[in-house]
Amino acid sequence: RGSAARRGFSETRHHRPGRASSLRPAWRARFRGAPRLRGAMPPKPKRAIRRDLVAPPVFARILPKNVGGHVDDGVSVYKRLASWSDAAAPGDRARVTLADGHGETHYAFPKRVFGPEASQEELFRDVARPLLRLHLDANDPQSAFVFAYGQTGTGKTYTLMGAEESWETPKHEKRGLFPRVAEEVLATLTTRKETDQRNVASFAAHVSAVEFYFCQGFDLLDDHAQVRVEKGEILGAKQWRVESSSEVLDVLNTVRQKRTTASTKMNPATKNDRGGSSRSHCALTLTTRVVDGVGVCRKATFVCMDLAGAERQSSNDNAQCDAMEAIMSYWRDPATVKPCAQAAIINVELSSLRSAVVQSAEAHRRGKPVTAPTQLGTAAVNYMTEAFDGRCHVANVVTLSQAPKCGWETWFACTYAEDVAKLRMPSSARSVPATPIATLKKTTEKKARDAKEALARTPEANHPSSKFHARRKIEARHFAREAAIVAEL
Image (cartoon, rainbow, N blue to C red; front, side, top):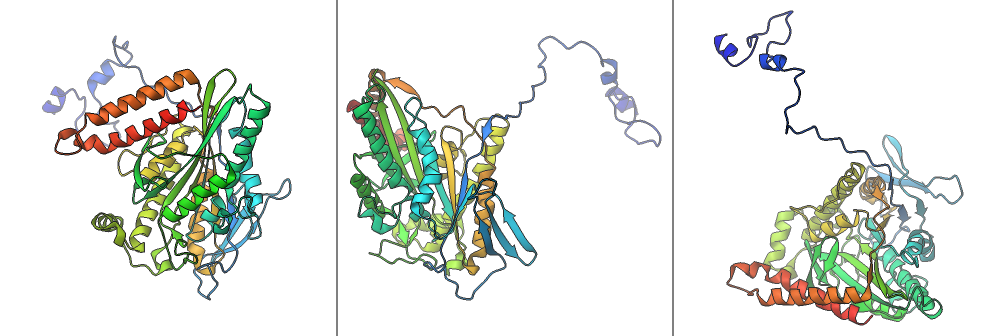
C-alpha cells in the first residue's frame, strides 16, 4: 500500500466488491478541469467522409458454350452459372445468378450483361463510347482506363483487342475495343483539325504496348526493353505514332508476336503457335497530344489493359507451385518457366490488385490519398493502383464461363467484380493539365538533358551508384523520346 501511494494511486491493486475502480491515479482527479497548458497539442479533427464520389461501371460478358477448353464434358463442380439478365429496358436491373446446393445467389454488380450473342459493336457502344465522349471533349479532354478480368480463355483479349483475323483487315466486324477507340479518336481529331482550328491546330496520336510479366514491365514495341512505373506513368516505353487504322493494326500484330503466351488446357493454341493463353498482363495506351489555336497543349490517354487470366492449377492439370518457387525458377532460366509458375505469379498479382481496389475505395471514402504498395508491390499492381486515384475514368469488363466445371472460377470473378463495383473515386481530379507548347518544349528538353547527364555520371558497374544505372537508363530513354515527340508538335 505504501508503494502504491508513493506512485500516486489512491487505491490498492486489489479489487474490493462494491467499490469503484481500484486503479485511478490521484493526480488525474486533482487536475481534472484545470486549463490546458500552453503549447499542448489539440486533438486531431476527424476526417469528413466524402460524398462527392462516383462508382466505375462494371460490365459482364458471357462466353459462348464449348469454346476452347470451356466445354461441357460432363465434369461439374459445386457452383455453376445458372442464368443472367440484362438491363435492356428502362427499370430493368442486370444481374448474374449462380447456383449451388443451398440455392441461388444473385449478383447485381453489372451495369449491363452481354450475352453470348453480343457483338463487338455493342460492347464498344456501351463500354467505350461514354468514355470517348469525355476523352474527346474539345475544351476539357479527360483520360480513361478500361480493364478486363476473368478466367483464362473467357474472351478478355478478344474483347479488348479483337479476334486475330480482325488484325489483318481494317473495319473488321470482330475488331476489339482498342482498335475501335483509336479509329474514332483519329477520325474525330482529323475532322476537327480541318474544320475547327481554334480547338485543334495540330495533334499527334501515339500507341504504346507494355507487358507485365513476372512482376516487371517490358516494352513489346522495343524488343522487350525494361520499363518502370512511377506515379501511375510508364517510363521508357516506345511510343509508336499512328495516323490510320492500318497502323494501329500493325501495333496489334507486333503485340501478338511479342507477348508471352502458352497453350493450356483451358485456352489451347490454334494458330501459328502464337495463340493460346496470355501469360502476362498487357497495357495498350493511346496517347493524344492536342495543340489548340493559342498554342496550349493537352495530353490525354486512353488505356485498355488485358489482365492475364485467373486459373486454378487443377483446371489446367498443372502441378502445384508457390510464388517464391515460381520467381526462383524465372531467375534461374526465364526460357524454361513452366505454366504452373506463371499461373502462381498471375494469381498473386490478381489477388494483390483486388486488395488495392478495396484499399483505394476506403482511402477515397476517408479523404486520404491513394498510394501504391511500397513493399511487395509489382509493376502491374502499382500501375493499376495509381489509376484508381481519380486521375482518369475507369470501367471494367468481367468475362464469365458457362462450363459446369468452371463454376468456382466464375464465382470468384463475380466476387471480384463486386469489389470493383464498390470502388468510389472523386470526379474533380480528372481534367488534364493545359500547358503552353513553348513551356512544354523547354521543360521536356531540360528533363531530357538532366536525365542524360545523370546517366553519364552513373557507372554501369563496380560503384555504389551503379545500382541506379538501370533506372537512370530508362529515364534517359523516356525523356529523350518525350522531347522528340513534343518538338514535332
